[in-house]
Length: 525
Image (tube, rainbow, N blue to C red; front, side, top):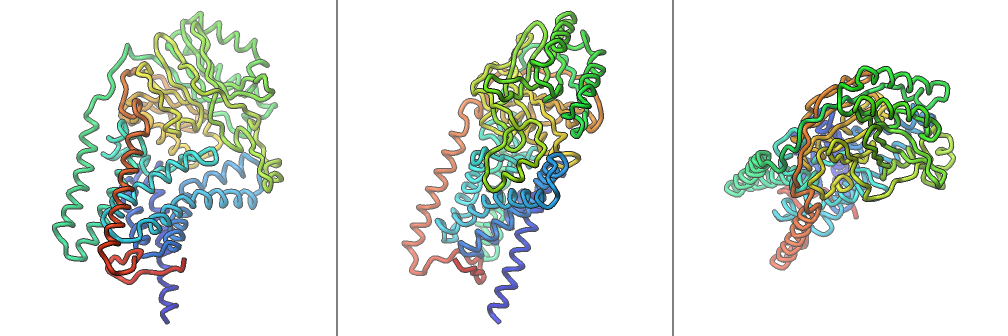
């Protein structure tokens, strides 16, 4: 009877973990219900406090399956619809990808109960948020990195985003997770009738949110120069036609037609990533014609185009035509999208995938800023904007950030809104505008406060004519990078470890994982 009861509890807890992960997915774009990013981790923390180490691993894994299954399901769409992989293998690859990502919250739960076995306030308020943020950071590094769905991104419309210029998205994640832990600790204290302590938790909670909101009033940067008149050209070339040799003329005609009325009327015209899907060396006459038009009309044209490398591969490049020339070569390539890793057991599937840009070569690090009209532009291509450290350049002369992308790979899924949401966080971190130009949307200009200043309707040819005000100055994040937030996280872990040792020293009882005032659910280690 006891084993049946425990089995039923495990089933209920497991289901709760999956549903909590799915709830967290709703905190991100396009849904943007940011309070769910506080509630969902709080539910998972309750489960971890009732579990053994292995149980915490299992519940963390199930939570991850819910989060990433609901949040990055669009990987299947890219692999199956545009990669040409049959439905069943595409589903298997997507499931494997989700399972790998789910190991990060699973490991967080395991290490929390392994190294912090006693239920002390420091375990909840220090170790829990610190370990989670460390796991997000590791996820941005391992296996080329996948920095999607960091909890901090969900707070782009909440007061917590005020921490971004100081501690980046990692600091915003920490504040959100600390808020979750404060709620859990307050509930535990209320159940134990420690009302003063419970109210103290709620006071700290309010202080975190009010303090973060107040930080948004700090003018970290200031306007520099006159506003720049720009035209963002959204060609809306269907992905299934874009790379087809029979339909290449569509790209030439579409972008020329949309751009023709713009010459001489705007200072800068921008086309998206790989707007012309032909190596530059093969269409030098066409590029020369565009360059002459730009010069004659005192306009600059930036466009994405492949450039053949001496090594035989291709660069995913962004070039400027007109009186001032510049070039940027994409550094961080997308695995399976721009280069093909050699994975022994997946070779037979990879060979069947229709990857038109699978021979890309990465550009070098520390490339020069793109310049025009005395403005300095920090460029990025596609999902490079998702990497906080890659986009952090300690240079107060940067006036705005630019991303060109082709999000048509994702179809009509939430990936486009998630991509833009990460660009919004980059704007907050550096307190500079971000110009975001996509093939089929979402094309937009983001203000230094991380809000959409202007946008084009998605999934249609469109020209967004607007202005962008350059900024100057350094935010603390640009100046110091991850050093402050990681120093805080390490100190919190040390404090919690010392607290655990002190607790163990002062008690004669063996260390429980946690009780929360009730029987612990034991899933055998």
